[in-house]
Amino acid sequence: MAASKFVCEQYTSEEYVASVGAVLFRLSTQEICLLHRPKRGEYMLAKGRRNCWESRQEAAAREVTEECGYPCHLLNLSMSTRAPAAVEVEHLADEARFYMGICETFTLQIRHLGVCGIKFIWWYIAAVNENEPLKEDRHEMDKCTVKFYSFTEVLEKLTFQMDRDMVKKAIDIFSNTVSK
Image 1 (tube, rainbow, N blue to C red):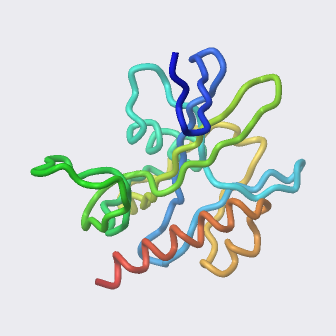
Image 2: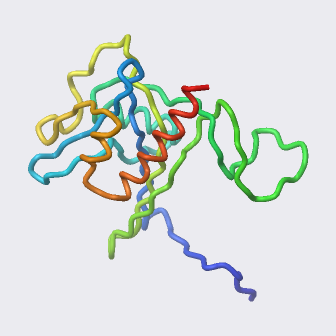
Image 3: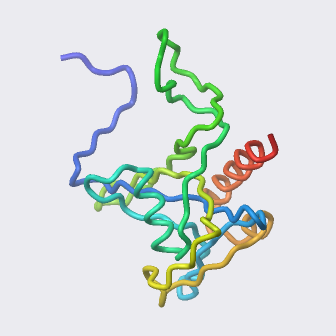
């Protein structure tokens, strides 16, 4: 039996959690939404588990709306990705390419949960549906507050460095898409 020349890991569905989230922008004010959990002293982004039969895109919009209370939509962006175009006319090397107007994940975070397994978190960039009312029945209302902050404030407030790095990338993609 041949072994792969690459370092490989394999997880069965019982061993991993598939999660999605989004960096939520309010376009009119150029702000980003954060959740604050006072008891933990943490500032974070909205994310959650993908349900069975649900696409990553559907789950991301649902989770952000449930946790923040703001109806939202995922943005079509101009960004680089290693995903091939929807229709490949020729075989292309596995390398990053720049696409305009795509709705794709821009970051994958992997968290090792010890004996509990592993968590994959696929991240999108979203925008508030500003013409829709705030949802009053958001999840975990009693555990966290929701507030929009400037780009600079978000990068100062986020608890985890990995989240700060990811949000910097989201701001760059967002700014480069919006300014064109």
